[in-house]
Image (cartoon, rainbow, N blue to C red; front, side, top):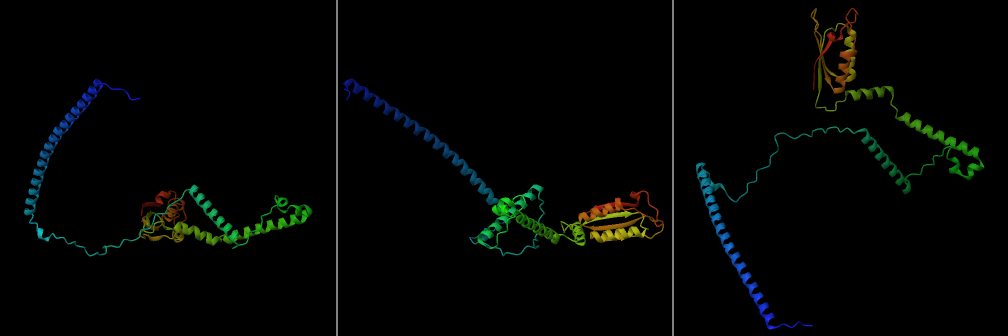
Length: 291
């Protein structure tokens, strides 16, 4: 149903529309007046900025005139300099050795073993290699052979024991093949001592020895230097009643540690008349150790 409107209702609706139009006109006038104020302030600020720029440009021109700057040499062409080699070639520096923790070593070893085992399984599946025989022991032989084990247990037991002996012999042969001889083992140990992790750095130790009259002590020093791969020199003072002899040792850090241990602690310094020197500190002294 449409509501019925009388004349009074029409007049009230008309008055409300007029009031809304009047309010809108007032808001537009306010916006125009504020916009004019803003534009005037922005024009003034632009004038100030332009004036400052002009002053700065004038100062730059004056400085260029003072420096006798030739602007004719500035062109639109681009100069490409001729490439030249550096004065000294950059050498490849040796990388620092990274030491793994025990946990990381175990993890790496386990991962490699799994990769080898996975590759072996793939080769067996593709037929590249034959599948290995089952590792039968006395504990699982009844489960593996089943009825045959019940019919003739003595025969199966004998066969299983033979297989176990073969596997044991194969394991021992592999260990014997990879085992080093005493000479090779000694050489490996000495190489580990002689090895210098940083070949560009040489460790040097300087010793002062008060008594080198005994040939036995001189032989010990000579043998130690040869075994550890040390270089250097031994200066013996033959002046009577002199107690200054100089020993210079050069080599890796482990070799230097070994020779220091020998001369300062292990060596029993003997005089020419085979008497033991009581104070070892007075016999040999480390003057300096540098690298």
